[in-house]
Amino acid sequence: MSYEVVLESACDLDADLRKKYGVYPEIIRGFVYVPGKEEFFADNEYKNFSREEYFKIVKSKAGKVHTAFAPYNEFVRVIEPILKEGKDAIVFTISTGISGTYNGFLNWANLLLDDYPDRKIAIIDTLKYSGGCGLLAIYAAQNREKGMSFEDNVNWCNENRYCLHEAGPMDDLSFLAKNGRLSAGKAFFGGLAGVQPFADFTRDGKNAPLGTIKGDAKTNEIALQYLLKLAKDLDNQVVIIGHSSREKRALLFKEQLLKVAKPKAVEIVHVGQSCGPNIGPGLCAYFFMGAPITDGREEELKTFLELKAK
Image 1 (cartoon, rainbow, N blue to C red):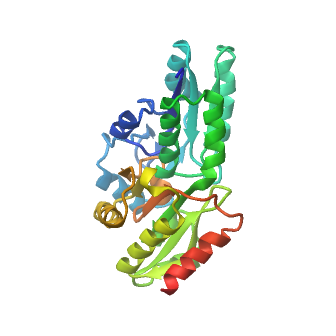
Image 2: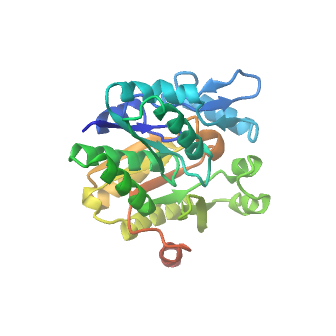
Image 3: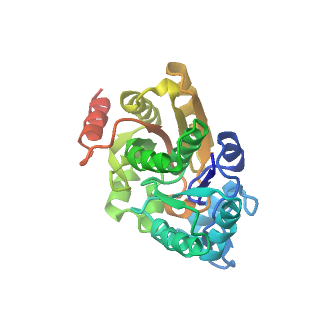
């Protein structure tokens, strides 16, 4: 089909996964600001820092490492060659509930289209972050390969973004509190020995806890059962396991899932440099497709509390 599926750097698919699923190889890179260093473009391949080194930096300088969405010239660097080839572009961004990237890219797209009036650029607010954004883009690329038109694919993404769930814990809340993403009180309770907040998305694109669980084994099991309860047509799904410096736990999540279910594919994704400063270390979660998220997360909360009670 005559359009490309394009990611910005907060949509965490590395080069291998972009190639595997037919996502455009170049990503639109946002900026990262680290105290004492010159600003740099986010690198999802971690060629400038090892993953371990990077998360040590963002944790030790919590609240001081900042990100910014890509400037116009970076947007043009990636998108203009597509338009010159006579193709259109669907661009996926991190949630408007977390970042201003979507609105910024709308402006960049309108400016660029002044020079290419016969071409189209659609900007998708995924209402997700990290591997969640990437998963929606994978489905868009698969839709294209099945022959779905540009307009129908854009509509499909805007409808199905509400069906994309998260299931998993964040075990390092002290970082989020220092970075202004969580109240000190919540961080205190989350920091009690072995207590881990369990999160899913809201309809307006935020990541919010459904409650807390104590103990790694119990948390892992509830994450798995939550996925199994809410996922739709799991045998035909791609499931992404996203993590930030929790590779062993991510591998365990995959092992446990494959013992009880056979998704079409299970991919492990490390949080990239754009999302990293605002997530910190400690995330390990499934991203998967289910029924649409309810307005007040009533069904999601009911499922979580039932599983926790067992």
